[in-house]
Amino acid sequence: MSHVVQPAAQESAGEQAPLAPELAAKYARLREHVRDLGSVLVAYSGGVDSALLLKVAHDELGERAVGALAVSPAYDDEETAAALAVAAQMSIPVITVATHEMENPAYVANGPDRCFHCKDELFDRLAPLAAERGLAHIAYGVNRDDLGDYRPGQKAARQHGVRGPLLDADLGKAEIRALAHHLGVPVWNKPALACYSSRIPYGTTVTVEALRRIGKAERVVRNLGFSRVRVRHHDTIARIEVDPDDLARIVAPDVREVIDRELRALGYLYITLDLRGYRTGSLNDALRRR
Image (cartoon, rainbow, N blue to C red; front, side, top):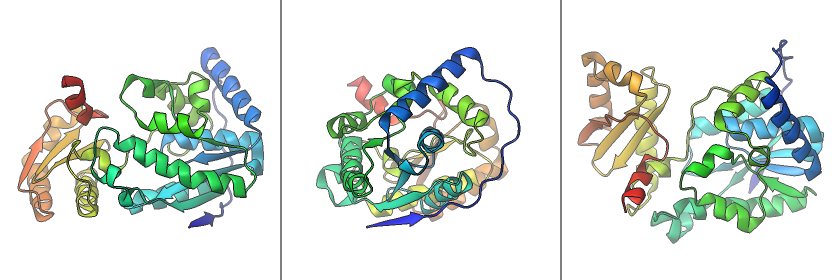
């Protein structure tokens, strides 16, 4: 089941300083890769990578570029609404697509290949949508920095023939943010926000109840002014990651007491702070140790 959200009128962007020569060259390469696709359905999440890709695709291909946003219990409802609002602000149509990874026992079992099953489900759902709308390709926001970590979802993309124009243009995360800022993409500085299943250690079953608890816990911490947050879910233990520069502030008595009270109310017995701070893919540390 899918639903199309129509865009609102976009405000004109102000003048921007010229791009650095190397980034300008990569931007030109990205535009060329996108034009070569002819038409494309962009797997859009609301993060900076897919938002930039969707923006460039729409700039280059017009109505032959459409975004598709997955909706499932693994994603926060507020983030879904925010992603749709960003697409509307950029005047780009987006299709919402219900995905059913939670019905797949291999996904729920939460092995190291969980992300493969998630992306496999997503691309399975996007393929008929692309065909129905006469769009020749599916693309997603993989970039150069994603090659430096364990990302089984990339295997699913290869198997489905999904394209990665940002990677083809050799763009890394910092360059993507700089280019998104230049092009007026509203989420150019938005912290990365992977699905909530990525907060659950491998081998621990993924449940809707756990996903909702994680979402509520992270919202508690974010609402206290911490922009980059992960609450890793270790059954009755919440392990909080924030930027290293925020470690001193989060243990201030007034802040600490709110977090302790609110997360205990959600069902956690022990509230802990990771002294290494925020880092993406920290649960992959267990794989590296093996």
